[in-house]
Image (tube, rainbow, N blue to C red):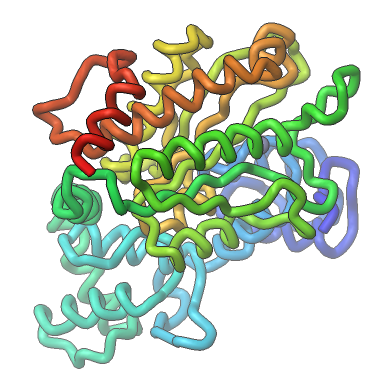
Length: 383
Ligand SMILES: [Zn+2]
């Protein structure tokens, strides 16, 4: 759908206004104009949800607004295999269960089997009928207990433990590389005056293909989420589902950034996390390693790592990061990115970061120090 934006009017705008009023981000629901006040409150909403802040209501923002209508307690939540309930109320419930130490899975706003099981365990402990659904009785018990019991981050500790148990050898692990954009007319960032073949979509595909070869040579099973010329574009959710269905151990999504100001440059890496402090510890570690290896090896500006709740990061069941490998709109970054030797350096950096994920923490090495050729020799000697 076309993004709804400042200057638009009509029933869809009225709908957006009424949701924003419900979230207490806007005062008046009445007119159906997308005015400055709506623009400001859409941006505040995007900020709070970790969605890119642009004031436009496109598919992702609309989906988040639609889900945000539901406050916990406003409806009975139950598990449906065919048509799962989705909403802000589910996410609040999941975060509350996690805080209380129940294994509700990643807070993805979807009332799935794992959430139902966690509710059922909670019901058993407070002596309620164990039906795995969250109605008025269960809500009352949650309200009574929820504030008292606030633990650590059990979900992330479990994720870290599962990752540790998977072993310290990357041979045989499955990694999904996700080149961003592609398909239809989704080229990502395009620099008008540059040669058109250097779109974000093409450059990140080239990087993904190089990385695929190197990771496979190191013994990993590698899947790309798309080919060089996909027939249609894919959403973040579709990419996440694909990685889940492959049972991937890691996912790395590759993008480039763009900005009106051509002096903006540098590399940034994103992992799953919310503003309220819930964060994927393994994802954060991967983000740190990727970011630091790239910065040290290439000298690009360090725009640091950040927690986001983007669909791709939220819906993936494995540690997942997205890295924005420089600004295509920056003449300095662009000159380097169109050079295949520089792209090879980036590939080496990511390969070293992935390798370090599988070193035991105590055996880890300084950033920038892994010689990837030695690694390959060591692996071939072992095989
Ligand atoms: Zn992008």
